[in-house]
Structures are given as structure tokens and as C-alpha cells.
Image (cartoon, rainbow, N blue to C red; front, top):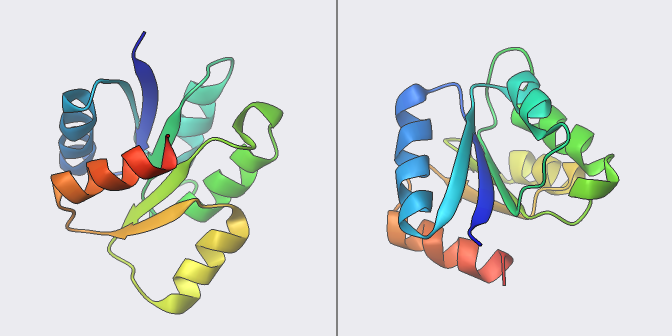
Length: 121
């Protein structure tokens, strides 16, 4: 059985690039365009990995992570932040919200898979 991943980004192109990389690694991928859409798509579903952008309309990545961490089914799910933001203050906010890791865009597919393999093992 393949692992399920959710990728959340307001950029359709970025969602497609991440989804392509994840599918190549054997994941069944669901895409969401912002935090609110992601919350809807996680309702009643189990994901083995979530990758989210930080800056999105309606609900940003930090709020999404905080909300997901309140749900028992996502308390220990690896959640990676994939964003253009790289400053330490933002990373600290991500960690405080419950992010498992932080990857700065543009991403290298091989490095993304290496990080995923580390957090999903």
C-alpha cells in the first residue's frame, strides 16, 4: 500500500512540482490550494506526510500546522514547511506551530526526497 501525502500551496505550478516528486517516490498525492482547503481535505482522511507553503491566502501554513496538531490523527504526522522564507524567526514560528522540518524554495527534488525519507522512516 502506498503512502498518502498532502501538498498545500497557493501556486498550482509548485503543487504540481511537489506532487510529481512525491509520486515518483511512491506517494499517493492530494493537492490543496491553501490551509482552509487542506483542512477540508484532511477531514476523515489519514496522511503519512504533509508539505505546506507558509504564505497563502485564507489560511497560512503556520495556522494550518497549528490546527492540524490539535487533531489526534495528525499529532505525530510529519509536516514539512516548503517556502521561500528562510529567516530564523519564521523557522522558530514554524517549529513552535509544530512543523517537523523546513525546506527553502526552490527545492531540489533529490534533497526533498532525502528529507522525506528521514522524517517518514
